[in-house]
Image 1 (cartoon, rainbow, N blue to C red):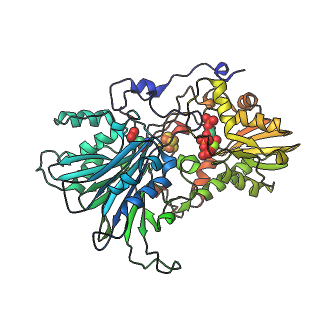
Image 2: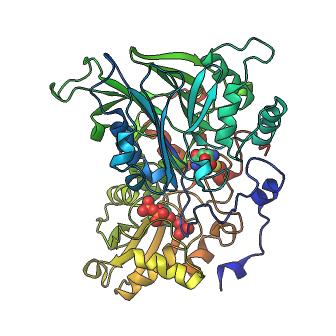
Image 3: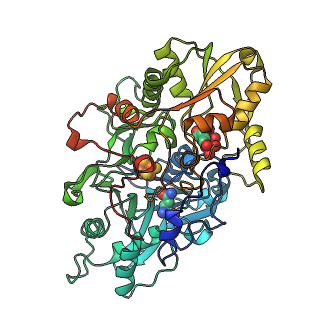
Length: 527
Ligand SMILES: O=P(O)(O)OC[C@H]1O[C@H](OP(=O)(O)OP(=O)(O)O)[C@H](O)[C@@H]1O
Ligand SMILES: NC(=O)CC[C@H](N)C(=O)O
Ligand code: SF4
Ligand SMILES: [Mg+2]
């Protein structure tokens, strides 16, 4: 039985929606990063400002570049950095390009990026093609000086906002929702009032026009604003750069040498920064050479619940990042523990599909008391996204990523944990590899529930018909991929695991988007 024979084709709701003229006229544009496995990521934003005397001793561009390298897993299509000396409203240094950060920012590029503050972006396109013209940060020159904007997310009411901006006589040069945000920020707030350089008011105005989904870093002459949408759908956090010469034991009282703002905290230690806190849902923070302050916290429409993307925990984020006061690694372990509680089976070893499945496998092993052993080696030089012309080569492509550690596999009953099954391209070839290496039984346990619905908030989830969970139930899927059994973590189990380590217990102050699992979206879509 082939997966496509198993059930009738499902309608692709996202493509239908997107056929109407909007910001995303061709979400299946072949020039966008194609992927064979998994979900594709969502962009990383980063900002840095030096405190104290300017010109600073800190190499701001270097800090941003390293910050972006730490966020590379969030987008590999293009990247950009914009810096400012802080003394001119007219001049920003800009360097953007297609490809990976290490190739875009060579020595020549870094030399021209001098500055005391700056922002950066690494992109996985969700709206508008993966082309140079859509690279971020976007820079515009306004009546009140230059403005640079970097965006992670996707606007759910893009079409409406686009009409509004166009109706004000603004011309847009791309289909990118991030350019739209940049231009919407330039509208005078609120409409009808004078054209003042009040950027916080303009940001609030933008937030009133569009509630979801964005984490933004915005730079004007001498300051950076960090903005998280009122649902808190995409992550954003603050860190401080501490002196390297002082004692590492207690840097809590140290005067920071600079501030950073980032989609994730994973790179902070490697750039000499310390995690400070998350930017709150709806919060606008202002970073200046004097420090960080909250400008405002914008409410969600109709007091709807928060909606932080639960898949940041499952797959997107790096394990060493912190969200909601807990490390992503610990949450993944907890998911594995929960999975063991729900669907343990007698076996010799527990193992994982590296990378993202590994923390959950350790949790599963600890909870079940079955020892963990590695069974797969992942070839780090086979990228996440590469294009192959047909299914057989695609599947071989996945197999090429892995080798079996035969000594751990031979004659064993194995419980194999992966964090998610999306198209189902990864797991089948891996099971074959393990069987060829002598595995006696392979039982698949998935540390998230079946993925059934598309995402409209900055993640490129395959079409409904491409999602294997819409075609095969767990029993059918086990048969299709050659497993002895297969079980997913329940939705309740996932939510419980995610909330296990969150200190805030007040339900009105936490909330997670699970729309790709349930079909219940935080906001209706108006593309
Ligand atoms: O069902 P599929 O469509 O094959 O996708 C699912 C796989 O894709 C992801 O891994 P990926 O190799 O992208 O990255 P990782 O190293 O972070 O696990 C995910 O962790 C699953 O292993
Ligand atoms: N993945 C993202 O967050 C993408 C941001 C924006 N929608 C773009 O396509 O550039
Ligand atoms: S639909 Fe899924 S991937 Fe998209 S924001 Fe919600 S939880 Fe995250
Ligand atoms: Mg994986």
